[in-house]
Amino acid sequence: MSTILIIDDDDQLRASFEKLLKEEGYRVETAPSGETGLKRIEALPPDLVILDMRLPGINGLETFKRINALDPKLPVIIMTAFGTTETAIEATKMGAFDYILKPFDIPEMLDVIRKALDAARFMHSPVEMNAAPDNTSREGLVGRSKPMQDIYKAIGRVSPTNATVLIRGESGTGKELVARAIYQHSLRADKPFLVINCVAIPENLLESELFGYEKGAFTGANHRRVGKIEQANRGTVFLDEIGDMPSSIQAKILRLLQEKSIERLGGRDTIPVDVRIIAATNRDLEGALSEGRFREDLYYRLKVVTIALPPLRERDGDIPLLSEYFLARAAADFAMDNPGISKEAISTLSDYSWPGNVREIKNTLQKALIFNRGAPVGPEEIAQAISNADLNTAKGLEFSEKAIYRWVQEALTTKGTENLFESCMDRFAAILVGEALNLTGGNRSRAAKLLGLSRPTLHAKIDKYGLKFETSVSNPSSKT
Ligand SMILES: Nc1ncnc2c1ncn2[C@@H]1O[C@H](COP(=O)(O)OP(=O)(O)OP(=O)(O)O)[C@@H](O)[C@H]1O
Ligand SMILES: [Mg+2]
Image (cartoon, rainbow, N blue to C red; front, side, top):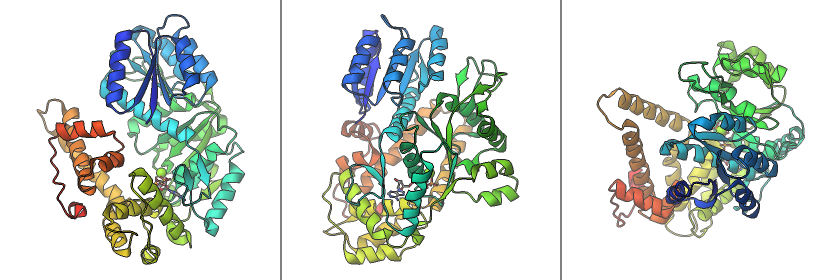
């Protein structure tokens, strides 16, 4: 459970904020001033700080500076009223994660909180290399095959340099995990690590997200915004799915790599920045080059230091190890006993081609554990889990994402829906919660774990959506 510290002198706001965040399943601590807040940080420490700008005693900006000096990796979200946006912007320039304007839009605020906690998790949870399969308490890169040994060596070689690194490999091969391992073993491990997913952010927003903008740069740019690259100054930026980056932005990234500076949108100043770039892609960059979708100059600049992750089917001997590891992790995650796995099941796993790579084997073991009817996990449960796993392969994901896009577009063009956002989110959440209950045979604790929700939050959602689940269903997998 993540701990959030709220620093604000307004008692009422602190109380209502605390209530709201507790309902979301967070542990909440509060402090009425910068001084007490700093003490709480040293005593706790929290995973995230939400900091008001207008404070008695030392002001918000000064408090931020001191927090940042104490722990530059602790994400801080600034709360600000209209009149104090300038200092909030100042704080983001110095590395604050983001700022939210009073009065708050609650869903938006919860979204920023989730993102900040994700970023904190990335920075703090260490990725161990060549991890033992029974090590479930930490995240690790598991595998002892020759190709994986070479990957560990490459990570060891590139980490302590400031070199730009390009990580390549099919979907699910562990590119993100490798990026985090490089960061954690780098000289910048005590500085921020920010992730930008070039596909997840709509094209028209990606540029301002990365580079920021000046007031008046475009309609709606009511105040200056500092981009992620500037915010990560002295740290590391992970550009995930760089093969999908629009070419106008590719040009700016090239310039960043060559000249170590950026310009905000609509700005005339050249701002020097010192960031290390780690990029990843599962795309055929050479194909994109010849089709003119990827810039040649950027391609050559990026590929100097490349780490290429082999697909799982080429890592002889890693499948038994990974299977044990993910089974143990799933058991720990769902608070279940680890039933172990039979030799026959391992050989079924070894015979499969794993188009979705490590992600697919991870999901398969999770499902096999849920389907498991006796100890240890046998080949039947594996076969059932694999045939159920299409959704987890790269293709399956792409397909389901397209379906979601279609659904969203339809919703947006259907006139006359009040609260469109809320009603779409509710529909989606109802399906998600319903399926999680199906998959776990109606076990609410396991469904809550699976969804990453607290039990009370799950209960509230079940009530809200009027979900009923017959616990007598004998085969929970029949619906999925
Ligand atoms: N060698 C490994 N050992 C343990 N876990 C791994 C390993 N490789 C990948 N994983 C796990 O598999 C999942 C997928 O990995 P990751 O997200 O890094 O893949 P990716 O290459 O970035 O995929 P995509 O191209 O789809 O983004 C994650 O849950 C990750 O923790
Ligand atoms: Mg990835």
